[in-house]
Amino acid sequence: MLSGVRRGTADTAETAELSGRTLAYFDITATIETMTSPAQRIRDHAEQLGALGHAARLSILRYVVQGDPEGTPAGELQAKLEIPASTLSHHLDRLASAGLLQSRREGTFIYYRADFAQLRALTDFLWEDCCKRGKGGGDACC
Image (tube, rainbow, N blue to C red; front, side, top):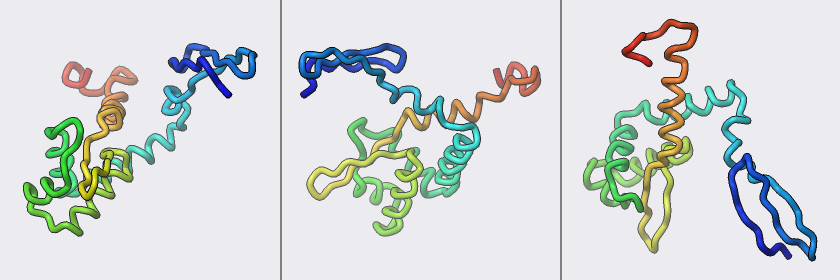
């Protein structure tokens, strides 16, 4: 049984006690994105942009990012955006499968919240090449 387990960042070794022996390990979760190939990153971000490429889904995301940090109930989204329940469910699933929304169930209610880390990664991706090769939009870009 592990005891004394401590979590840390990807660049720090941590230790755990196992049957009287101290083991070192690394938490690699923070390095997953940096290990993703450039081609896979493009596919992932294309999927996210595709999910945002529908007016209803873009409206849903824009409403959710303004909502409670704990999530916006699906019923509130349906009432505010006037989208039928089955259609809303399809759009929410598409946004969630693209990694842009997270959901949690509480009884019969489902709450949706934006995955701000994914949204930040997407916008960073869109800007990261702006000033490469000494070109781009100049001051407007960099």
